[in-house]
Image (cartoon, rainbow, N blue to C red; front, top):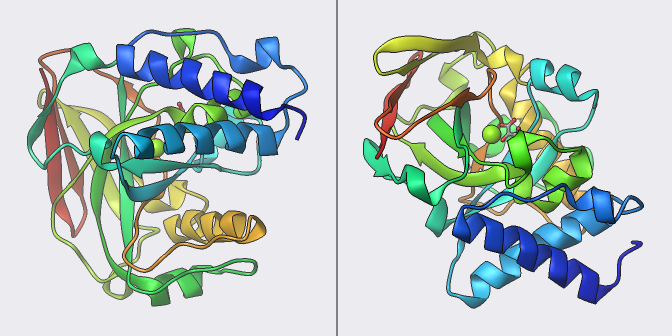
Length: 262
Ligand code: OOG
Ligand code: MG
């Protein structure tokens, strides 16, 4: 760690205020070029504690930058991880208020729900599949608090990995009955196809993203509890949305989920 507690708290307040007031800011690494990974996750943890002090509760976890396309674009080899609270939830087919967000984008994700705890180190795809209750389709709405969505990895980790809203729906399926690598996804905006891909775009197999999350938490003395919803990461590039847009995700064998920006 290179930052003191007061600085971590101040950065958490700045980033969360931007989130709550739909304002952008500059990357936190501009002021703190020496911040390390522990600092970045400490800011994220401080944002979580602020939300919890107002009564929010964690409803899930997420992995980000897990698609080969996004990793190549960022020049990185490790995904990043964040948390999801109840205040981020949009009901299936529901409305998301665009004015509450800065410059939202949507991405199609395979969502895992666990039935047994997962702990690293050494967590594998097989461990994840054995501990998964079901998988289902999800649309994540990301909304970086950084101007023009421009950030580096430590800045985006501090900003809870651009998390803002998400919707899940469709048909929950046992992952043993599916080949998640070959699972096709088609995302439409206002009836037009805007993104398509297959599960293997996420680290070769989306369960790998969940295993890496368990290994990341294991290194910090934590684990993924049973009953946790995990967004495994955008399969395609994220797509910008405007007020009035309707977004529908079709996931092979798992039906659809959708939301409308108002
Ligand atoms: C970071 C969050 C990425 C994903 O699924 O890759 C993410 C960003 O691109 O703003 O959630
Ligand atoms: Mg995502």
